[in-house]
Every structure is written in C-alpha cells, then in structure tokens.
Length: 295
Image (cartoon, rainbow, N blue to C red; front, side):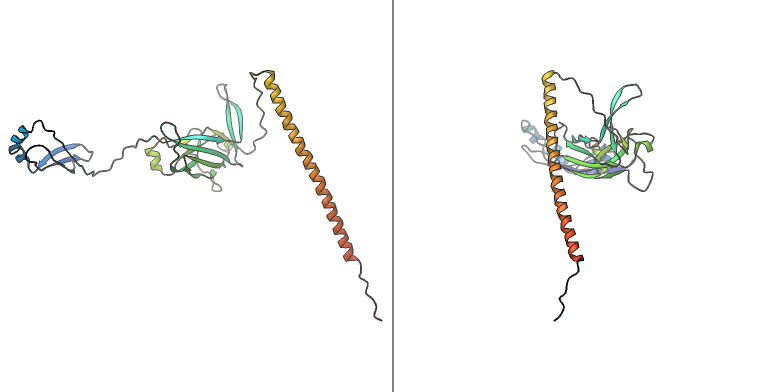
C-alpha cells in the first residue's frame, strides 16, 4: 500500500510547570484513513520532568490547540439548498387529449414558426427567491421521456432563440423556438431542460436543473375551441355582470370602428385633393407656352 504524510500537529499544554514542545505526525493512506501516529521531540521530557508539575496542577484547565494543513482535495458532492423553479411557461395553445387509459388531459402546443416564453427562478431550500445571485443558465431540448433529441440535419438547430441566459436578481427569461415537429419525431412531445452552463455545478448541485411539461410541436395551430362556461355560484347577479362587461366591450369596439371610418373618409378626401392638384400640374406642363414675335 502507498502512504503519504498528511501533516504535522503542534500541541501546547498550558498549566503550572514546564511547557513542553511536542510534534505529532500522522500517516494516512490515499483514502484518508489514519495508519500511524508518531510523537516526535520532547516526549520523554514530558513524562519525566513535568510529572510532579502535572500532579500539582491537576485542578488547572488544559487547553489543546491544533492546526492542520490540508494536503488533499475532495470529490464529495457539495450539499446546497439552491434549486430552480419554473415561474412561467407560456405556450401558443392548450388542447385536450385522451390518454391510453381513456382519461382526458390538457396538452401544451407550440408552433415551430413562433417563439414561446419560459421563465425560471433561483430559490433557496425554503423556496424563497435568491435575488443576490448571478447564475448563467442554458436551455436544451429533450424528448418527453428525458432523452436527448439528436440533430438530423445541418440546416437549423433544434432549439433556437435565447438559449443562454444569465439569471439576474433570482430569475431568467428564455425566448425559445422549437424547429423540429412532433410529426417528424414519431409523434413524440418535447420538454425544455434548464440547467447551469457549467456542468460541474449540475453535478455538485443537482437541484439546479428543471424540466418543463411536455409540449407538442406543430406548424399550424388552427383555431382554439373556447372552453365551456363554468357554472357561477353567484347565479343571476354574476350572469348580469358578465353581460354588462360584454356590452361595454362591444360599445368600445363600436366607437373604435366609427373613429376608423371617420379617419378613412378624411384620408380619402385628402387623397382626392392631392390627385386633383397633380392633374392640374400635368396639364400646365402639357400646354404650349406662347412666345411674342419680335417687332
């Protein structure tokens, strides 16, 4: 087995009598286990000359001071309370899909032609935002099962937009666009994973990684069906409030349309005046100029 010297401890005993100087040397293995302890210098003097003094100073308090110089590095995982949390995930459409077991669930849908927004926050172990941090983050594309999405062509990356963002004051906002389609990937859905740009941070702080809910990527979103109205506990009063707000909205739209029509009439009149002036200028240039004959 191979051994190494881990360091030297210098110990001083305070009390009545002579203060000896004593060196303690530890021999450790490469794994860090203590194999041997050597006492160097002044051990016999401590046993002989200071025995009476130690007996007379029995009630005195003995203080030991030790300093160790570290000589090896550790690869242990650093325990930290920091974690990432999804604060906002805006998609283009939400549809209802039926699972294999017959249950219905919401399905997030994005278009490969439009970007969507993802906002994450850096929180501590008590789920409180850490506002005094600056953490470079990176967004990557995964399948719904967590495996990496492979690039199949060299034309365009799978995930474009603001993929590298620094979390300032405890939050980072990504504007992303998935270029691949679920129909081209065996109808698989995608997730976005956000983690530190430094891979070592992900290994030492595994909670600094978060993934979104699965999303289906399509080209055309189509028309979203309005959700059915929910029964209101307020009864007729709530229904009247909804009707009143609808009437106010329709009146506001009607006023806007009337203003647009009036503006359109004014613009048409001005265009007609400009056209009339242009025609006059053309006719003036076309008429021959009469020149007086010399006398």
